[in-house]
Length: 472
Image (cartoon, rainbow, N blue to C red):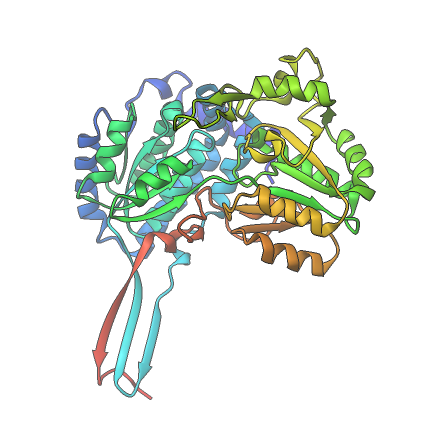
């Protein structure tokens, strides 16, 4: 892994080469004033790109990886400035992860079926132009990860980013286009708008040139895409529970849970959101968490914190009770800053807020996306597993377990039925960080594609030759 000193050296060299003042002033490639212009430009580029072979596409992807590594910290800083969420160091690591572990054209496999009646080839072909909606939580990582996967599949890409992350998303689109041009590819094969809105999103979704749709975000945007009548991939919300049983390595579990829960201030959708622990090891787990940057608040302080990080949403129907939802002002903020809101002042070493609650508490039932972890004591593993499954709310996104009992691993995996299931590691192992497997920031639970990659953004085409080329 590249350390902070190496990252700083890379950034200094890049800024020197680019000119620190020149970067913000130059025209960004692929960024347009209107969605109509973006669609027209992407269409024009795709007419050329559709004839690029795998080798040409892979050369483009190599350049994207190279530039992403070089400008990882620049993007991390801009993302924090733009969204006011997360932290620069972790966002820098996320950009390096995307550059290293997002699959390229090697993910595309051709199948051949031969027999007495000839030869059939099944190849993975592009859809054409893909319309992608990206979030504010992982903005540039999602743009770059999607671009690598979608370009590898031979597609053009239109992005409609979250408005709160428009500057960093435009920067990422520009980076991808600079890489494409450096590798001899067409201009504007990836395009976006400078000021994304609901109107630009609707135009992209409904335009006949856009053949496929991808949404990385909340349930509302996923529902909109799925009702479009087009092929759509939806990466929806999650509320990942972590279970700890009494066979686990408790000191390691404590550190792993805090590491995962606080990675980029809990913005990744896979991060531990609530913890269910067997009562006979709960005190040891909490003690271990306190040694790893957690600060425990009492019941009264928990009530105070509720009023800071949760707000009442107006009822959707007359007679319905108001529902508590997250206060977006505190999503992805530092634990230190959140604690200060209830009069608790701590040092920079505190990175997570922990509290003991009942199962019904909103900190358990609501996906906070903040470094706050509710802990629920359970008498048995079966009780912990049952609560965890209910708290996950059927999102089928991610779940985590610390245990050395293989039967517990098997039972929980079958019961929770999530796309990602991490055992004995921080949650980020589920997307290939310090673990095996490729990475993505578009995890498609609702539509079933799972950990997306280049093959997710292709369609099968069959080429049949009868009574020939079967040479056996």
